[in-house]
Image (tube, rainbow, N blue to C red):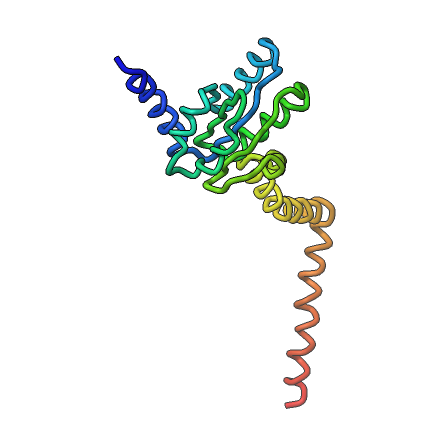
Length: 186
């Protein structure tokens, strides 16, 4: 069996992983200890992110004709890819957080939702909260005014149900003289 035939399934595997990916982040893992690498893989796996080390030439073949092709020029030295099909910012967030603990890990670049980001750009992407966090903040900000209104109405009802009744009774009393005045003139 020729070497090309052995490598073709690996190229196909990489292509399948990046085909429908929300984001792909290319990292240089040189200098990580086995313990650090194991910890990183565990964190990524728990977040549903595929993290694998491949030969640069195989990634280069798989990247051709895809959004990831712009990362081909960065395939030098030991490289791994982190691929997420669900959360576009998760790989960058987790890798950036881990890189603070293990400075040997270096993010080279990434493709997020079809757009190429260099090393600085991918660090900016890492600061974006996840979709779930953003939705929670949105719903919290939408719910806040409603909750405040409910509290105010509840306090009015508890404090002065009588005060509210007096206001309602005062309004018809003011209207009654207005109705009598035109009748007196006639």
